[in-house]
Length: 160
Length: 160
DNA sequence: TGTGCTATGTATAACGT
DNA sequence: TACGTTATACATAGCAC
Image (cartoon, rainbow over all chains, first blue to last red):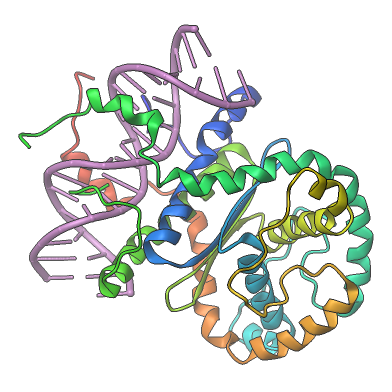
């Protein structure tokens, strides 16, 4: 989608990678927003930037969709596990070894979560600005996309 | 992005809306997948179709990213609420009145969640197939996009 | 519902600023 | 780090299966 085709693999140059992230970050959000409006469906999308700042968009909101999805997963893992595994399905598990307390299946794990909350509180202020971006994205597809308007001059224009 | 430009508003004809959903559903996933690979960032995207089937993609997985995000939100809501509200920020709250138990801020709410899990278990089997789709999406951007290859014949080809 | 087709709208790579 | 420009790659509307 540019002067040249690029292969989908990690951009090695950290500087270029940051530029690529900046340019492509809005892509999924716009697509997701359009889909949610056109088809009136629930959707949530969350991205953590290279600097680990969260960018999100959700319809009606990320929390609702994410929680709904997680509950589906957890219900599947806890009770239907035996039957599902019989079909050869097994959740791939977290390969990055994060300690986010992913998959709160048991009440006991909630206590561990509480500890995580305290840790997160230290960094929360820095995240607030980035989180605000998600609200702005709602407007994107509804505007005439001002930034691209200039291109109208260049675009091929068939007989009509 | 087709023979005609369409405005981003709900597609009124239910039949057309379903078609539009089918065609556009993969869009956000492909963009999200490309972004996660190119920039090596964490991303999660979940869509509930018109028929309420979940489609998801996540890197490293939806659970990790979604949980991480929810924890950030919860931490912000619980402890930093006073300071944040002072800046005029208040979470818009869930307008759809779902009973998903969205936003598990307190340990006491975990018990309510457990009740929800039981309800979800009844419908889980129907969702499994749709959930599998999310794993396939990973391949999309890495393939030469076979379905579009034909278009190479048509595409404008400058001197080089 | 999903697939394949072609014409056209959009996103974005490479380059500046 | 983000924004403007242009050429090009990609996504998709409308159509037929």
